[in-house]
Length: 323
Image 1: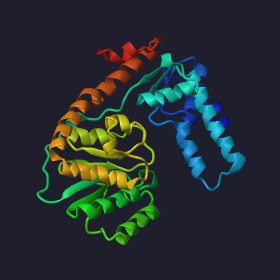
Image 2 (image 1 turned 90 degrees about the vertical axis):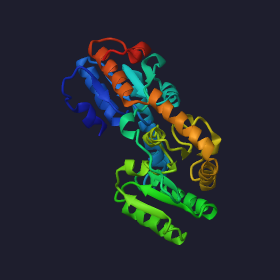
Image 3 (image 1 turned 135 degrees about the vertical axis):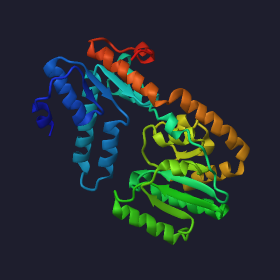
Image 4 (image 1 turned 180 degrees about the vertical axis):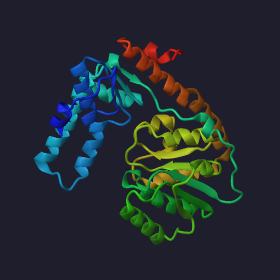
């Protein structure tokens, strides 16, 4: 695979843009070297970290082969970090990890996610009864829906009027979905826990009281920004940039798979409506100020413009209003 990537003849372009290290980054680097054009690397997660997690979980790769493949992916990231002309990360912690594998701090920049704030600035229509908790995401192991179900059981023992909505596709891992349905049934909460399948999330954001994230791995979850913009408080596992997005408020941040801590956060929000009202306003203002998609587009337009003309991207490039 490595030799196929290196031997392929890429199309000529003014900039070569890779959205990850690994094979994509290697292909962009090969094109950069072949044609003498700049390379842009924009990372959401960290490719080598994600591959390492998969490799360590695999039952097919063991011993020296496991270590060898982890080293290969680390080496690919190191090569890309040292060679790319401009590198972006979603948040500062990932930017520091890029530096640890050789990225020049002068060439790395934080460009956070952005959302369509107009789309998620919706009018809320709370339901007359119940306390509604939602999770927006695919029913797959990395989202750890089983912990969401365990959290629901704990909350329902304390708040029988609560209802839980798992909002997202169920067909990507049918075996895992079946396991989740069996878990709901075994916990005897099927009347209060709903798998909705694919839906327009705006229909749910209009009435949800809390949004929950139970993932074991994320970067900078868009669902938090969406919920904040829609005026919904959030409880989450401590993954990616979640702690910063939740203001490092330990009441609403839990270790992975800690259903009791997640449930405690949900129950706290139920019991403190006045504080929740203040949080709705504060969180929405934060999204409008820092996570508007139009700002994201402007920053990348500036990066492409400068790189296409042979310039060097700087912090001032990102702040320029001209596109």
